[in-house]
Length: 162
Image 1 (cartoon, one colour):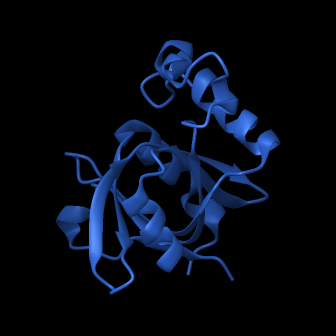
Image 2: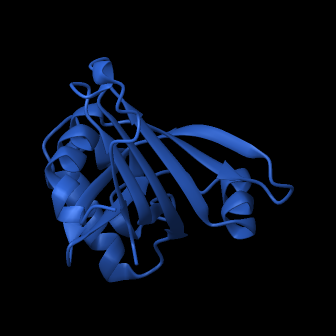
Image 3: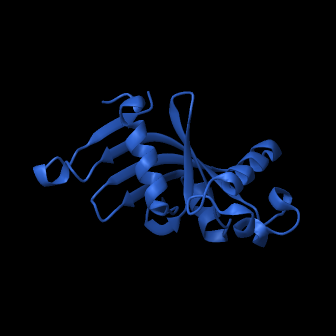
C-alpha cells in the first residue's frame, strides 16, 4: 500500500483534468446506481477530501441514507484512471457550505464553475436551499497512469485510510 503522498500529484492531475466522474451509490436493496458527478478534490492533512455540487434528489438522498459509500471512477482517453471509494455526507454546516461555494467559484474553469456557473443557485449563494454540496471522504484511492497500461499493470498505486 502506498502513502497518499506517493500518488497525490497524479491523483490531483487526473481528477482535475478529467473533471467528471462516474459515481455509483447503492440503494437499500444493495442495487448499484451510476450517475455523473463533478467533484473538486483537495488534500487536507495529507488525505484527499472532495466536494460535489449535486442535487439532493429524493433517490440520491435515499441511497446515501441507506448506504453512505460512494465509488467514483475517472477515465481519460490516455488511460489515466482514478478510482475513489468514499463516504458521502451532505454538507449542512454553514461555514463549510460557504467554503465549498468559494472553492467552486474560485477554481479555474472547467474544474471550477466560476461566479457565472454558480449564479443559478440564486442571490443567496451558498445560503440558497438548492445549494446542496456533497462531501466525499475517501477511504481508498487507486491511481493508474496510461503509460503503465500497455505493460499490463492493472493494479496501479493504491492508498487506504488506516
